[in-house]
Image 1 (spheres, rainbow, N blue to C red):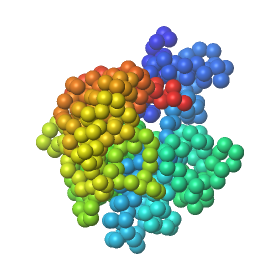
Image 2 (cartoon, rainbow, N blue to C red; image 1 turned 180 degrees about the horizontal axis):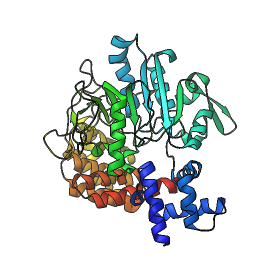
Image 3 (cartoon, one colour; image 1 turned 60 degrees about the vertical axis):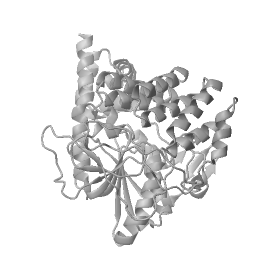
Length: 456
């Protein structure tokens, strides 16, 4: 009987928030239920299930225990770089008389929508030129977001000029200024609800990062339908870097800004999907005028938003003729001096390679010199056999060369050395999904979730 009731509770959660037990973990759900039973002085599971079925407040309390917010200001900063460039290059020249409407969902404790607001201000918009709605299922997270008081844990990038500009420190806390705080409107909502924030005008930009990977197929489809209905034609959708594999078969076009993971909605999209249809991401440039200035994935949490140094990037594009994504090398105009031939030669000959030579290997890879980058990375690993960062870089180089087996081996070595390494786990999840191994991908997603919990 206990197992049956447990399954009923899990089914209820799946229907309401879209997270199945295989993702949340039955043990985690069980522990949360025990906490709520103790708090409510309820004698058994059957009584608790009955309470859960009739009480919206109890369901929300259980959900609060299961949600583990993990965010910080300018997390994975490349989308914010792209947003700023989009506003300057496209929005201001043609739409400055309009209001730029932005939706951030889920918004957690507010770091993401506030980062969006700071990016829009930096791009030249005034607060009366944009509106940001931020939505989350968690009322606790929303309360924290509205207060806009943060600890150092929310500032994980090295460049903290935005902290100096927009925050006032008091003890070990940081209070966000009213200019940014008042630019965001926070709302409670459930992304899988068919009536999700109904009555709102369509948005020009939607941020929905790092949530779809935790949904089952049915919840993901509901969420995508809601997002499509809320996004204007030619609007921009930002996803997390694993979630690009969750959207296959419809009418979104991937913009060509590596690591932004932004997609443009086409004008002829009819606002809905037929039964069984999913979304298709295709690759097409968004902004065609001017030089594209790109920056590498923030491997050390260095944000160029306020003090920017451009560097080349290994670009990954969607293959419109294949059933899954393949990684391709792309030539990109650069604004930084290339590594000199003598520097490369001297670095390759060195028997003791310092950390700076790993950066040189990364520059070589970004510049398309994959063979030289491979050699340097291998030499570095001979002298630094426990370098997690080196194994991840080596894996990315193998991916760029189309050697997925070797890439997976490198990422496996990285998580052997650092079991909760978020980046390596995400790469392994993508590789598993690419080859159709959904069971393996589900296990890896659970590991990612546990890693987040342990990191708190």
